[in-house]
Image (cartoon, rainbow, N blue to C red; front, side, top):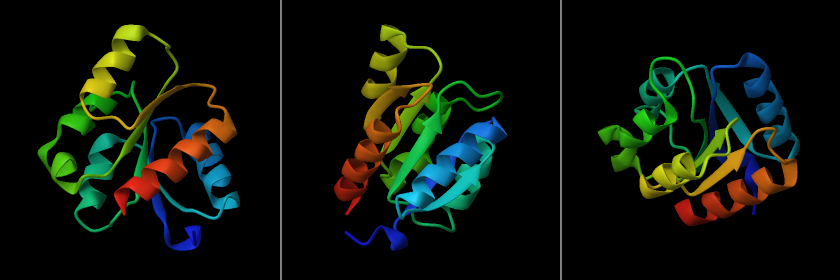
Length: 125
């Protein structure tokens, strides 16, 4: 798979997390595009086509669940990999019921994230 053409959106309110995830994805050959909020991502969703989304659950303003529930996001059909600092069964189940492709906890294991991105990107094709 040629990952250079594969755009992966990264949405996290923490700049250091966005930077680290983008660096990891770029090193694996993906084209990461980062956003500091769910609203910024949804605005870009009208202009960009993403193979998948790495989405923080807890963000000020629009949460990861809010993004998953947004009609434009649902219509786009972009697989979401939700990441969270809290590993709570209820949050995991809620995200998965809302259509998340995967739910990973921070600090995210690099191999686990890349495997999820690869699988989600393949599903999106």
